[in-house]
Image (cartoon, rainbow, N blue to C red):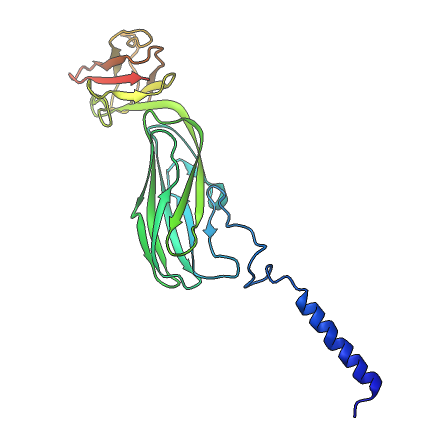
Length: 267
């Protein structure tokens, strides 16, 4: 038979244990129902959208492709370019917590005259598996410039994963003159569909031919042709920023003149 003093001590210890258990924070540990932070949606971040306490979810990682104009990984992807730029990323979706099913990848609100396309836009995950997609972000010739942020998300039977990337776009557009003197005409460049640029943009005509050229223009305000003696070397460019808006400018190679014409308009 237990002595009275020992029995009293055991009873007190049991009671203290009950009080401790009843006072624990069930929302802060694994399996709890609250107190946790929302999934990280920092631009460029790798996201695991598991709900607090685990459960079926989708994780997403995005990595810039080589020569994409982007640097960094995870939460620090930053891209630099100009009007007309294309940025490409490898995107990997991962099943966690037993998730299996279709996952749709999409971008949120885009800056003016930008596009963002996933190929494929919907991937299928098996339990514990991964699936890949390629994200292509294109800035229109008349797209929004300056600092921009793109937010991406997933849609499936699991909670959404959210991630993104930051972009800095210069108000410059480069038109490449190729071959002997082939002028750009896609997208835009024809009389009825000129290259459209924002007002105040710098228009650069880059010599990507195999020899020297001279750019000739129609002579309207702010867009004179190059000096006849100023033959432009390979990889050099001629740059103008015409002040007129709503005006279509014609330009072409004066030397050599291959009979092609290209057109640009500032809005």
